[in-house]
Amino acid sequence: MAEEVRVVTKRMREHTEDSWTLQRVLDTGGYDGARKAVVEMAPEELGGEVKSSGLRGRGGAGFPTGVKWSFVPADVSPKYVVVNHDEGEPGTFKDRELGERDPHQLLEGMIIAARAVGANKAFIYCRGEFALGSRRLDQAIRDAYGAGFLGEGIFGSDFDFDIVLHRGAGAYICGEESALLDSLEGFRGQPRLRPPFPAVKGLYGQPTVINNTETLSTLPHLILNGSEWFRQWGTEKSPGTKIFSVSGHVNRPANYEVPLGTSLADLLELAGGMQNGKEPKAIIPGGASAPLLTSTDVALDFESLQEAGSMLGSGGVVFMDETTCMVRNTLVTTEFFEHESCGKCTPCREGTWWAVKVLERIEHGDGRQEDMDLLLDICNGMDGRSFCPLGDAASWALRSGVKTFRDEFEQHVAEGSCPFGGGERVHVGARVGATGLGEAGITSQPAAGIDADSEPEAAQP
Ligand SMILES: Cc1cc2nc3c(=O)[nH]c(=O)nc-3n(C[C@H](O)[C@H](O)[C@H](O)COP(=O)(O)O)c2cc1C
Ligand code: SF4
Image 1: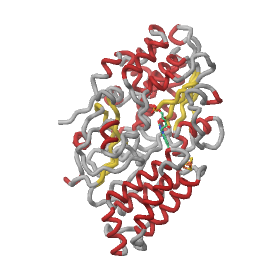
Image 2: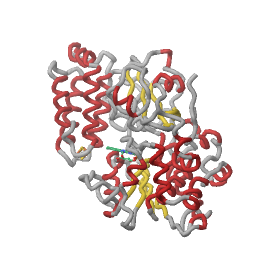
Image 3: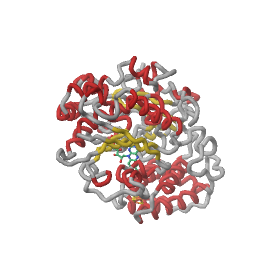
C-alpha cells in the first residue's frame, strides 16, 4: 500500500484546525530551523548544507537550489530574496495550500535563504486570486514581526530581515521569474533577456534569489535535520520528498507528499484510484506544459520523467479516463497558452493563436486531413524559437496531444464531428465540468474545491 511521507505537509495535516497560527507553529517546532540558521550557523555553512542535500527547485525547472545561491555575488549589496508564490500552472495547487495552511513555514524558509545569501529584504509575489492565502500570509508576517522573528536583530542576533507581501494580478507569465521581477517593479509582466540571470542582476538590478514556495518551505526541515537526513528519501539526483497535486478522474483529488522516485501507479493508488474503476487513458505528470503519458509505470523523479519523454515540472498530475476527448483536451490546454502568451515574441503570440483556430475546427467537425501536420508544423515554429519557455511549453503540450492521439484527431476529421459528443466552446478560465473533458477538467484550482474565501478543509486527503 502506497504511503505519504509528510515533511513539508506534516503540520498542516496533523493540525488541520489551526496549522497557520503562530501558537500552533511554536508548539510544533516552528522557527527552530530559522533560529539555528541565524544564531548557530555561518552563511557559508547554510549554502553548503543545501548544496550537499541536492535539493532541486520545486517550481518547475528543478535547478539545484544550493548551486543557484552560489551564483549570488558576496560583495554586492543590497541583495534580495523573492518567493515565487504565483502558481499559475494548470493542475497545480500545492503552493496555494502551503500558503493557506502553513505560511510561517514559508517565512522560516525565507529567513534561511536570506541569511545564506546575505539579503536583508524579501518579497513574496503572491498570485492575485489567492484571497485566503494572502490574508493568512499577511497575518503570519505581522505575527512574526511581533515575535521578533522579523525586523531588526532577529532572534537576538545582528541580522535584520524584512518581508513585503505583494499580490499579482493573475497572469501566468508572471510566474516566469524575470517577468515576475518586472511585474514586482511595477512594469508590465514580460520576460527579460537572460543572461544576466537574477542571481547576478535581478530585482532593481541587484542580485536576487528567486525560489518557489515549496522549495523554501522545505528548508526549515533540511537545516534542522541536515542533508543526510534529507537524502534518505528520493533518488541520487532527485533527493527528498515532493508534493504532487493530483486531480482529474481520481477518487480523492488532493495534494500528496511522497518521496521523489515514487511510481505514478502508487500516486494514483494514494489518490483512491480512478473513478468508476476505469483505466487512465492519458496522464499529465507535471502541469499542463508537460507532454502526456499513457502509462503509470513511470517513476516520479526528474530523470525518469525526462527519459519517458515528459517532465516533472511543477508536480501537477492530471489523470484522464477514456471518456476524455483528447482533441478537446489539447484545445483547452492550447487555449490556456494562447490566453496567457504575453505577446512579446512572434512565434508564441502567433503560433498559439493559429493552433487554437486549427484545433477548434477539428473539434467542431470542420477539420481537414492536412491539419495534423499543420499543427506539428506550428509546433516546430514555436519550439526553441520563442523568447521564453512559455512558447516552448505550448508546443510540447500540443505536439504530444497530436502525436500520442493522432488516431482520435483523424477520427474527428473523418467523421466531421467529435466522437465524444463535442459541445459548446469552453472558455479559458471556466471550470470545466462537462462536455468532452468528462468530469476531469484541467484547472489551476484544486479539484477538491477549496473556496477562495472559505476555510480550506475540503482539500485534505
Ligand atoms: C511560463 C512560466 C511560468 C512559471 N510559473 C511558475 C510559478 O507559478 N511558480 C514557480 O515557482 N515557478 C514558476 N516558473 C518557474 C520560474 O521561472 C523559476 O524557475 C522558479 O520560480 C525558480 O524557483 P525554484 O528554483 O525554487 O524552482 C514558471 C516558468 C515559466 C516559464
Ligand atoms: S514565448 Fe510567449 S510568453 Fe514568452 S516572451 Fe514570447 S510571447 Fe511572451
